[in-house]
Image (cartoon, rainbow, N blue to C red):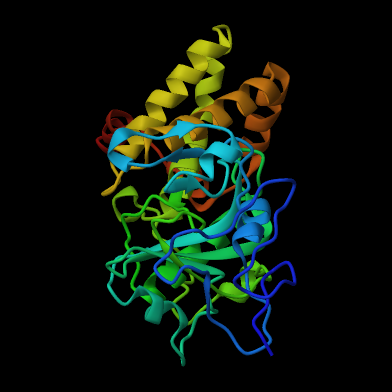
Length: 325
């Protein structure tokens, strides 16, 4: 039984979609490669371009040293490197495997990680490995932190499993449908986040900025900056939104400099804008006072100790005067 692509067509012939052809035109074999069980539906160029690549106007470039630029999807999909997920949503987990046997690390059995949906490798064998998520993870200030932190742990486990590069930023990936890379496609179906857990998935990620890597840098910056920004808003509430956004950006930039491998400025700016705009839009003086009142009413061990010290505090001079009577 032949391998099938994600559109139900025999592998090697990708149909035109909406008048645009995503036929692979120049990998070394002259066709798309695939890895899977006989009869298994594999991902295709067309499916990756239409379903996996989420941004409406992705950042893309042909040369990383010359910077990246936002452009239309049609133009971005002709570039060697393309943004696979917008800043607001994490649609895929991509690992940079900087080893000449990256494809074997991705698909060899037995392995403790699920097969990636695609592997885009250079002639040297080094590759980007991608796992497509069935439910994208929200990364804005309005997001729930538990799924984001879980995604951070999943990424760390996959990176350890295949020996990935801890310094990889994760924003741009090798474009699987570009002629510069030899692409090996895996399963066409996306993964639930919990299905990507491995024996290497950590139970908890370090919070220190100098130990953050990959998606963990985004989470660390997000947590640190928003915690700092909440009380700072009170002092800046009579200013302008632009001045407030610039202040949060400066704080995010300072956090980014503490990382061993700093994030690109584009991601730092996007995180700062997300935090600053959400707080400016949702905070009022009445809500802020109510929030501080609720926080003050929560009794913690630190507060209990402070109350105990305050209750047993005495004046030394008064005590000495009473002692000599």
